[in-house]
Length: 272
Image 1 (cartoon, one colour):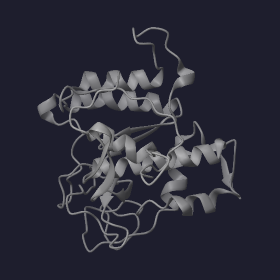
Image 2: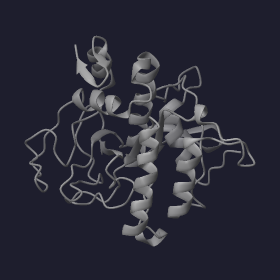
Image 3: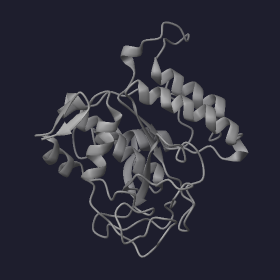
Image 4: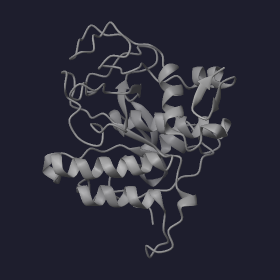
């Protein structure tokens, strides 16, 4: 059964799919179906528990861990967590985790990961899975009115690679919490679910995006609201787009919807 120690999972899931049918329209994709996998024990996981959940999502099983069903795999996985060295993550386990994410990608699953809350210096995207190549890494922005990067949002790059990939609202996000209540939380954990919900919404409207992570990433990246910064990180000047503060910009789901209606993807050819 679903279990939540402190409302974090409830809050992130609410941002993805939550709605009470009335005033609390908190979810980006409120009619999407969801499954979950508990990969922590009261806030602490290990590389093995994280990878075990990745395997479960690749082929969900019954309650006894039997009868795996690849056909029940989700289109997108939200990962509002990081694995620091204190949880056992290392260069060696990063290779294993990257392999697992690569397998999910090959199965057609978009792997969304929160960038981390170690900002505001450059090079603060530190912990996997945000640091791994095929993760769709998400930074946090403030309210739409201000639309700036959150001070806590981790900045890239990761080595020579761009991070974050994109940004989304993560400051003072109102969503569901325990015991049928609602409350606000801040963090890139709150930003990632906006992107996961956006993926679900796009796939439901445009089924040809399903099981094609690169198509989904391309659509969201190219239609993000461009955002620049005075902060220059590594080889990514803040005046350029993408940059290592916002990535390709702030998530803009409507722009993505408006843009892709006349796009064709045939045998690897992308065009109008």
